Image (spheres, rainbow, N blue to C red):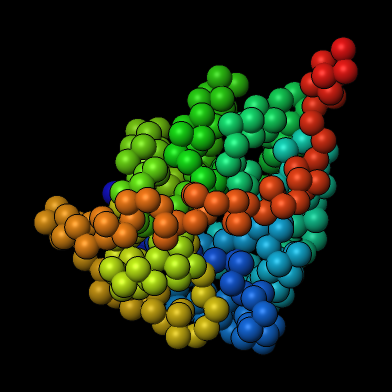
Length: 320
């Protein structure tokens, strides 16, 4: 388990080998610009979360056509930026496109530096090779880090744990180690194509920060009627996660996250087994984790232009 400390309302953990102390709950950026969330409510959710101790802010260049980053940027004015660890994600696989998206995110978020930028949606076996090509996105990330535009580098994905392991392997072959890795971690994931079983042990071994997401699969998991929201959050918090990122589109859902932290106690093996037994049948085919079994959640599949062009030498090989 990541080393933990707490205040009256929030738990804090160390983010892998970075030494950064972050809130065990992270505020998901996608939800703050959903259709039913107006700007005033979004600002209230973000600032109340920060006032009560949530420091980890999640976002992405592509969330709601940039509206999520713009709203986050507004919420972080008036001294709030200094109280948070700010993360966003970039879709570009080419150096040129990744550099452009980083600069756009900086503008929208109204900051000079983003604490953590992650390669988003590593969901295909070719993604790691594109990222680590000479003309690939990681070159842009390193240049941005050297220029003081970002501090740490990670990657995310929701499709298959083997692709995460492949990304770690390609990175190692290129002499690079990630600071963080983000993935679905839930009572369902444990049973089907499990990131918990395959990826988390490797991250713990390498002391890379573990970022959990989709603990309730945007509410889809709850439709199985096998686990409550609090049980879902407790399960994810019980893993060696530095942060469990969860979407908050109302003050009630924000309150639920604090309730989960308030009532959290490390679970023993029997408690874990009992919870997994309840979810085993519903989780066996990935039915309640459609981000693994369909392309509906793959923004980069629907918008391939976000990735940028393939490396020039690959295009030349194709034409030869």
